[in-house]
Image (cartoon, rainbow, N blue to C red; front, top):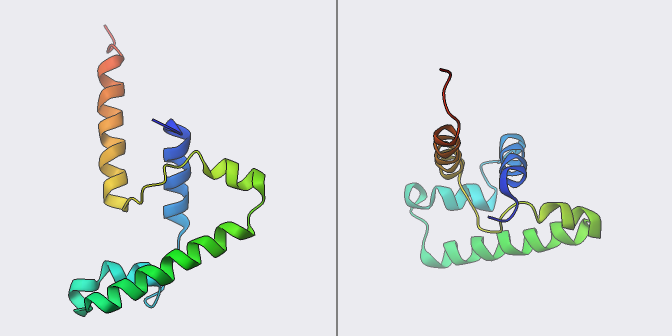
Amino acid sequence: MMGGMHGMMMRCQMMMGAQIQKTDPVGLLALKEELELSEDQVGKLRQIAQTARQEAKAVLTDEQKEELEAIPDEPQSMMQMHRHMQQMMKGHMKEKPGPE
């Protein structure tokens, strides 16, 4: 798995520090059912979010972009990340023998 534990820790830090306002595209997309967004609205919001990601990445130096490579590219919700970390910990606990 690319990035391993370092990537997970960076993703966790990123998500814990993220501030999402009610009109941010990703926040609106998370509420698409509640807001009853049309397919056209969803498509436009996804495009706005993609453009913003591209513009944000363009601001970074090559070294900063390289550091971000530790974080897997696929998006992940906080709940998905939590489940993944739980699975990793279960595997880690199985590898370590308990005190005798």
